[in-house]
Length: 192
Image 1 (cartoon, rainbow, N blue to C red):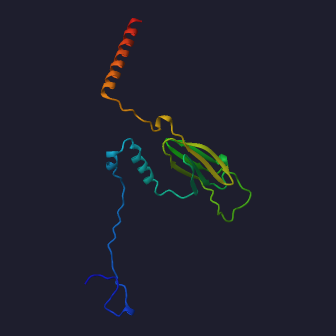
Image 2: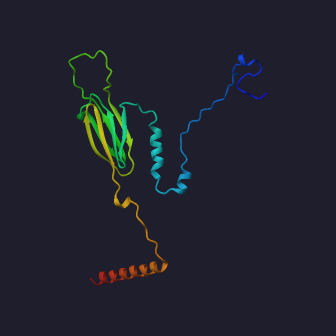
């Protein structure tokens, strides 16, 4: 008898759900296969490194909380809640396309005894992977919020450009011209 979800052998008012047990298998994926991507993409060597970095940071704590905002096409702002930290307690470092924000409170002795600590003041380190051509524009601490400005500055060499397609005759003339120039330079170099 096929499963219908409800026991239809009884009156409709007395229907009851049948118990169904499903076998659940949990599969953990530890590696990525980028072979299909690399067949048609050029220059994405860092993608595998990025995926490994992100998967390795799966158990990172959520302290301190942060927001990432897109202000314009090439401008972003990272805002972190760092209540109780002074500018001297915080470090913002950019190295190898990674932004590292860390904080450690100074060990000043307080005159009062804290009965309840609801504001976390523990040391932290947050890492963010930056895309190519991203630069840190500014860093400001105001009202317990650390604002880090980021901009994408694409160099002229990375911007799209049109490549002219020539004919084989033009290429032959260009090759002969370059060969003649090289021969002339070699003769001038030997004469001097």
